[in-house]
Image 1 (cartoon, rainbow, N blue to C red):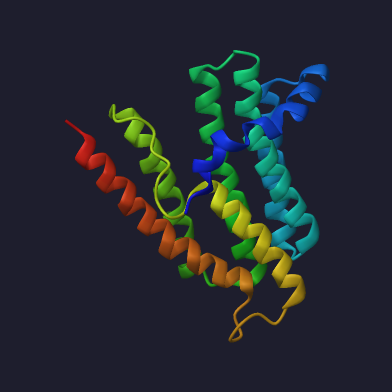
Image 2 (spheres, rainbow, N blue to C red):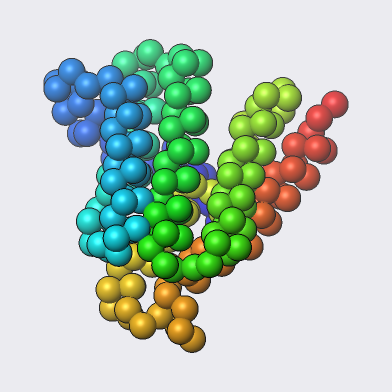
Length: 198
């Protein structure tokens, strides 16, 4: 289901934002760092159960994360350093947001670890495929774009249904989804990479 497959189809949507970014003198690395700051803020807001600003910060993280690569391509300044920085920041962003949700009392630590390891392993295997010469692989049922969208949807629904379902907050159920489908995605990416390695 991963939304990452739609990146080529929505690239024209970024053109106005790219033009504004260039006029403002922004660089892809500045946007990457901005995405990290937004993720840290989202984690803090989730920790204190300030859902509305948390969702806004997740949206900013997603926007900056999508825009930094598009800006680099538009300026023709893609580089291994920028790619490396982007992936490191993405992993820290995942950690800050998810630990904020856990720390806000939405789940126990066992479920939190299950969710976080699923997210990190699926992302790791996707990029490790590139390291072994297969090429980066974004396939599987749950990519990063999917996770960010689900976080925003769960946050909004939490405002409507603060009591949760069966006594569990909706953000807690979200972590169940991250754990189950994150690890399933990791298995899918592992199998794809394993069969592609010569």
